[in-house]
Length: 121
Image 1 (cartoon, rainbow, N blue to C red):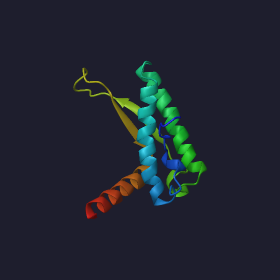
Image 2 (image 1 turned 120 degrees about the horizontal axis):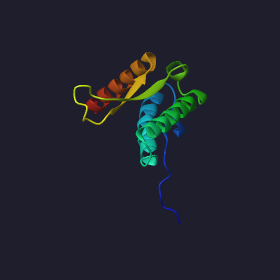
Image 3 (image 1 turned 45 degrees about the horizontal axis):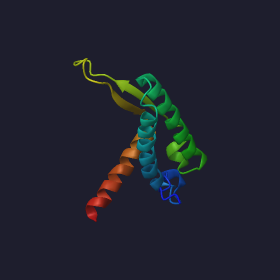
Image 4 (image 1 turned 60 degrees about the vertical axis):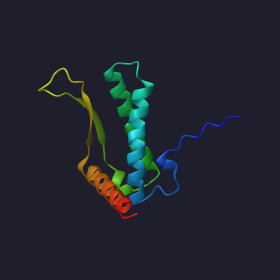
């Protein structure tokens, strides 16, 4: 008997629509990136970045296809980049997400609302 819990994704959740879709998307985005870097840990950084970008693109498409929040996701993009600290070339590059301004603003607002509701409880 397999007792391993089924991996859950936000886009499969019945409440993944409207403003809540942004919260689920944030969770799925972090999980997607982490998963890809783990799966491709033996590959070069360039391959890890490439595979993570493909997965992020698929995730964004998934949210558009299920019409989780058309205003938030349609026509939006997230580009992954490795950025180095020019002042310290020995520092490992850091993963940076370049999110289209509209989607980024909506995610920030969603996270602020979630944080505010947590502090009230």
